[in-house]
Image (cartoon, rainbow, N blue to C red; front, side):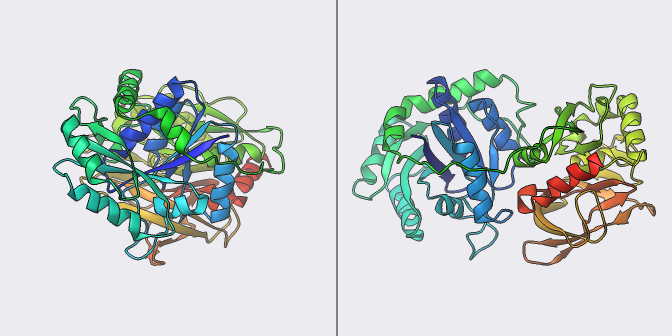
Length: 450
């Protein structure tokens, strides 16, 4: 029967992503089917999960999604695997605010009834680590904190001291991972490097798996986890793919919620990938375009040099066929993009806005949007939840572009970063999760097929 575990940390930077990837790769090397999930709205970690496990990883978020939707996504993808590994975000109890568990890994573990492994950066700690773990274990009596893994230890003796300090604390010690200078994954301004840009992928992942296997008895870990099975889920069938929708997929555009893609396919879309970086033609017979986010700023010169593709996308947007662009995809549709080094590059010029990369993030947080006009995503009044995080600043005005989102942050405050519609082209900095409003995926597929 399949097993499941949440890997959470005491804070960001404690090593939970390295531990998660190491466990995924180690279990996959043993021939197990490993399914990854990520707590929260992050795109980068799920991409790395896919490299380690060989399967797409799915976001589960207690603020963007209802408990029922979380159960549906988890059940659908947990079925048929040997172990599901859910990586937390930030610290175990960190969510949308000081007194709410919404959006936290703890909330997710409680919704799903999955035990938690706590990763602790034990550098410079001995007996104090036991006090820290005890505090986490007792903070929420409804949470099952099953085990602890000490990271960044200095020696085997350090690990033994930590294990002895945990005697009779009621939390299993899975092991201690010694720090290694050559293990950290490379990072950049939004976090770790994406799976698409990660060099020496197999070498890095195998090194993480070796590191984990030296300290953790994988068979014992798996044996100790309770069996986690759920009733089969019926999605009501999937329509035959009949609506060809192109979606940008390359090193510059790789931020998509897997559930968004699945829901579009369920609604009858055939999703056809193309590369704004390298292709010179859009796929044939497209009825719509979906331009996701990513790192266009890192590839701005290449994107600008591909003038043929820029022209093809511009013409498609002018044709009146539906186009939906999020964050990096929205930036691609602007007039120009200026990098941090001050170089300005022409983009598709669909919207008469420009964007420039800044040293500080310009927006960060959850968003709830309400449509104020008919769009490719729905009728006026339709609502959905998502997330916004970017370092680019938008400037300029486009009288032909109507603002069609009413945007609120997690506290309900009105936010200025709305969605813009020009013709049948919709662009926004907000990444929406269609699981927060399943009608949106069906509506987009429907207007593309009309």
